[in-house]
Amino acid sequence: MRHDRHRSSVGPDGARRGSSRGRRRAPDEGEEEMAKYLVLYRADVSAEEQMQQSPEEGQAEMQEWMAWAGKVGGALADFGSPLGNGRAVASSGASDSSSDVAGYSIVEAADADAAVALMDGHPHLKVGTIEVLEALEIPGM
Image 1 (cartoon, rainbow, N blue to C red):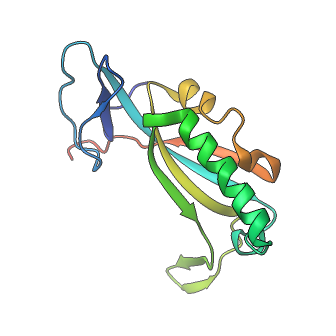
Image 2 (cartoon, rainbow, N blue to C red):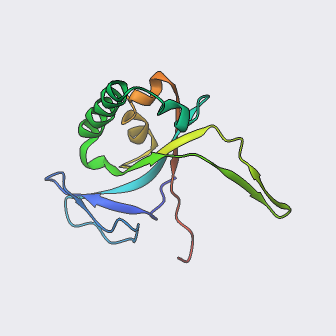
């Protein structure tokens, strides 16, 4: 099932078109409509712990991430960031989160298989798993 919310389009020249806010617009002739996907980086080790490394190790890891970003190019809508200090909120109040989500990115792809293919060779796979979720259209919005 295809959903149109949070879509932009890519022209024949590979350039992305459309709002980063996810507003719909009809693609121009020759453009393919793209869906946005939330990429969740899951790990047994928190992002804070992963970042406790020497400057040299940190630089080497960042180079791997930048190489991945360069490989996926315009499909990377938002590089994202590490996440930490999570709180779980319920009607009864808030408590420390037990989530294993260590970070996120947002990618654009024609379908879920294409979004998953963008994760090939991702440096996070050395320390954890990656979950890819499509941002769905909210009817009437």
